[in-house]
Length: 145
Image (tube, rainbow, N blue to C red; front, side, top):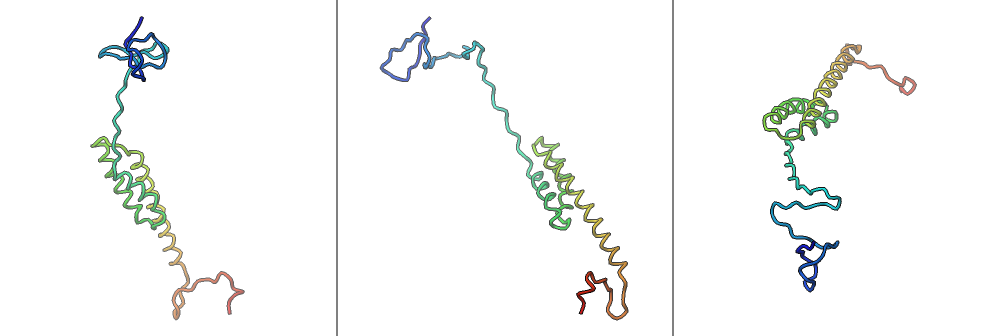
């Protein structure tokens, strides 16, 4: 059977036998076939969900919470909960980032609170001299003058 083809060279005749290298014209409703006889089906592209910007911010603030002495970790914990609510409401992407930032925010907030309580207890137990204030033991007594 011969089909109408579009060739790459205009000097070739319009009707060619089935041969590789030619693009066949298809009309609407006709199926294109792959070399193995399976019909070619065009699948539309899946639309990309936008990532919530607050989720990205939450993750960054959560990661920097250790460096900033817990200031940004408190923000990450609060903004993470807001971002999770927006993601649930708007069906946007970024749930994993918002959740990770929220968890990091709470963990670093708790760690910094524990640290500052420990520092307060250690300073409160330091011996106090009436004339000079708190005294601390010297780490290297041999180096004193």
